[in-house]
Amino acid sequence: MGDKRTAVPAQRGAGGGVRIPAVPGFAPAVDGDLGGSGSPKARGKALREKVSRSSHGTLRLTEDRPDAVRAVEESSRGRVPGLTPIRVGRMAATPFAFLRGSAGLMAHDLAGTPVTGIGAQICGDAHAANFGLYGDARGRLVIDLNDFDETVTGPWEWDVKRLATSLVLAGREAGADEDVCRAAAFDAVGAYRRTMRLLARLPVLDAWNAIADEELVSHTDARDLLGTLERVSEKARGNTSARFAAKATEECPDGGRRFVDAPPVLRRVPDAEAAAVAASLGAYVETLPEDRLPLLARYAIHDVAFRVVGTGSVGTRSYVVLLLDHRGEPLVLQVKEARPSALLPYLPRVGFPVAEVAHEGRRVVLGQKRMQVVSDNLLGWTTVDGRPYQVRQFRNRKGSVDPAALAADQVDDYGRMTGALLARAHAHSADPRLLAGYCGKNDELDEAMATFAVAYADRTEADHAELLAAVRAGRIAAELGV
Image (cartoon, rainbow, N blue to C red; front, side, top):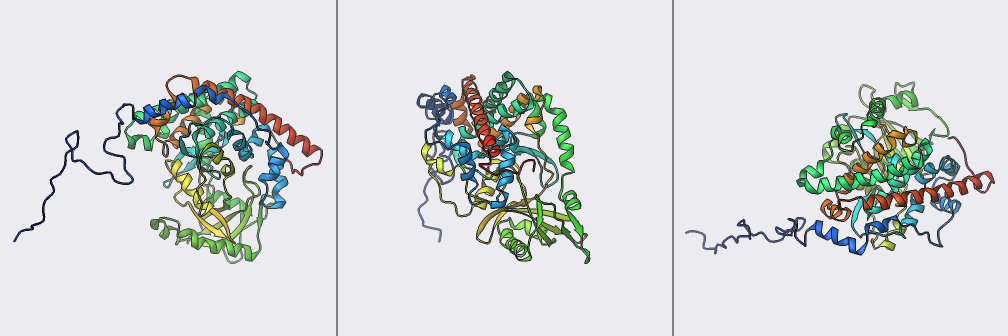
């Protein structure tokens, strides 16, 4: 006998296809995406009535704003005390360096500026020196954002304004005149806006995987940067675990290798501390995709050392772990403490709820993967003595452009390139049609954010002067030149 169950005829949609009920995780079959009043582009455009694009030029500092010294002291809490003077010394070097170390202070100030309410996975520290080159799994070089310690879901405007401000400061440090510095900020925002419009027009898969590296320079009209990028690329190709290990380790009597003290940047650690870091890698491998496990299983852990990193990161606990394969070839992993994002206290002020974070290292890793087209294939996280850490390859063909050392005719090119990269990174989590609808076709947003960038750069120079005066007066300890 045949099946007696009643057949339900397929229902047809308005366009003739099968009408599919809503499925979690997917867009509705009909959602006004073709340009109607309910389309993402139209909704973005409508937001201009609520938050005008010109309003992004305003900077209003609140009375409860901490001074520069208090801001540095507050952001140093919980870090390794002995390293605080190094951090202060690095921040005191230049106004641009001060900005690099003061993401929390800028977030405090940005919380008083207009936001559209469009959320994205943001870097949280998208200054001009946090873009760079690194190697993919096959050794090819990729250029993208490359620092995610502060990453959160937050206002896209905060990243753009931080990038624009950093370009003004970097340009001033490089000796560019004020028109060039403002133009760099203006061009960065313009490139962000135009790239978002381009991504909004592309098929979703094409937009998701844009922008191809070989097309980036021509897309952003950054031809003056070609020579600089080629030099940085050549240097990055040699910046590997093997090269670092050759300089930072020595051969042991048993044929293995160990790190050599190079204070204050690199130092050996007691056996118990090294053992705790090494043991944590067992939990780390559980955070990796299963296809990576046979790769790491072919390496043995040989040594662990403490290594001081960065400007904003100085004082966080950070280790390098030396792995050797059967031929004695090294792979170095970095195990870096992941602290709560400095932006967290300020997100509720602009209507962004703070989600509970199960593990800060996981937050950093997932945020990085949400923003990059290609990420380190050994990214993971772990816990050491109750503290959360992220784990990644160290010296993975990394290279960077020093924006403060660029020629005057290169600063705006660099601004356009980084603005385009930032737009692509945001478009992974925020609908580019929505952002493109808000940002629009003309340069109203570019003008406003460039005005903000110049004003905030002036404020940062004043903050830096306060910190430098405090160092000279002995109010706060600083180790300069480290």
